Length: 124
Image 1 (spheres, rainbow, N blue to C red):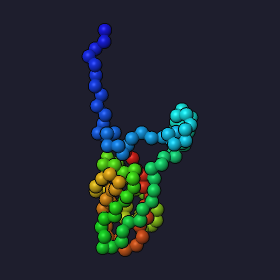
Image 2: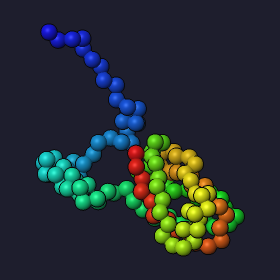
Image 3: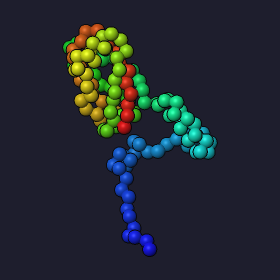
Image 4: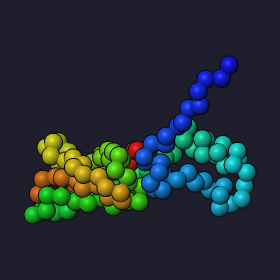
């Protein structure tokens, strides 16, 4: 005996159009199972297409905008220092992502004079 019909409501993130499922198979015409196996293999090898680098704005600025089309309102950014000045910035505890909007994240930091380069990973 079947129960009542269930309605599944997609998460709002999936309704925005930004996260519409697309694969290279849509562009290449290759069967999806071939493309998916390649993508899964890349993920298992740690090859995520969610990384980049950014240099923080210099003094007197205390914010830097990270612009990337992969950023949504629920995206989290994780940073790692790529030079000594960035390591000092990270050690001060003043670097954090204050606000995310579709396409950009505002990073708050101290007003430093030198080039502070960070690598980042975007998730979500």
